[in-house]
Image (cartoon, rainbow, N blue to C red):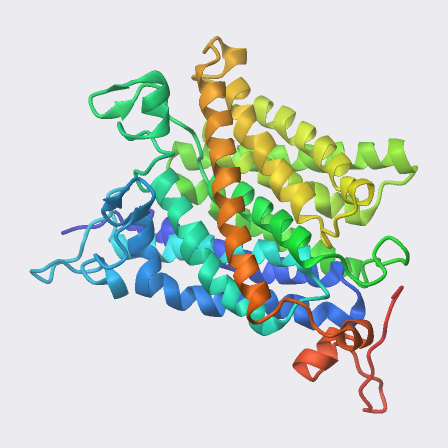
Length: 436
């Protein structure tokens, strides 16, 4: 058959952009930690790429998009190892259900989402966990939390518009589809709420870094942070515009909405910083980028550009305020994953109920969409939180989470990986600690 080569090229480009986000995240997180932990922080992102790149091919795709099992997961054995995913029984290429291109392109696109979602969690537990425990957690969490969530939201499961899903139970269904369909364009629940609540659970379970709240733990390389934010913004066009599954007008709208919401997120964060602290910082600008991106992710195809500006600005303000809660409540979310991704994901998911141009409350659509968005967000929080708690407790009682106090204080890079990020001109290896 003749493929739509434009759509195929766009989806492969989008997949590549989203894959770039994880190395971008490594720079973003790596710059935010102290110098003695930068390599470990970056390795946590690269480790997620390694583990998930393998397990997604084996059972991840099938669990996400295979035949429904109880509304929670797809059958993991149905397309194990991508059997029947790329070619059918007659040897013909399988066509995507989303566009006129090969289904294997969807596999390429979706594996990048699984990778970045899991890698996001690592920032909350920086500086203090065993690398082996993180790698084991990565494989188990993506299997038991991410793949089921992707199936529930995007694969026809409980949180989708299916006639046996939550939305249909609340507002009924017509011709096999819920009368009020939940909206998650590119991952407000699947990616950001999922990773954000997992981060909060692990932070509470593992405990704070030694010296948290008593000594400064400032970013050691703000240019790295800015570079990481730039790479994330660039890659996010694949994340959001790619979720239109074609080079079309929806992709264009998602691109524009992503840009305007992110720009507004920067302004919202910087204004909040200036009023609260007296300074508009580079770290604040980079964090505002991510806050705006997170919030627009579920809404990129449903809002107008003006609505996206409103959403981005609100997210920038609320996330800037939320990151300070860790000092008030005493939980050590090292790199503000909870404050940015959980809060930003909740803001974006719920705001659809107000700002969606077709069904939003502010556009005369009534409260039905808002109700569904809130319910879906709550279910996602509870599901991911409980699954993460069980996984976290099992790892804590078996492998253990914490590195030794000596390794944490002396430098996790050298203790765990046997290397440091910075060396002297003379050739002798040193760990240059900035604001330790």
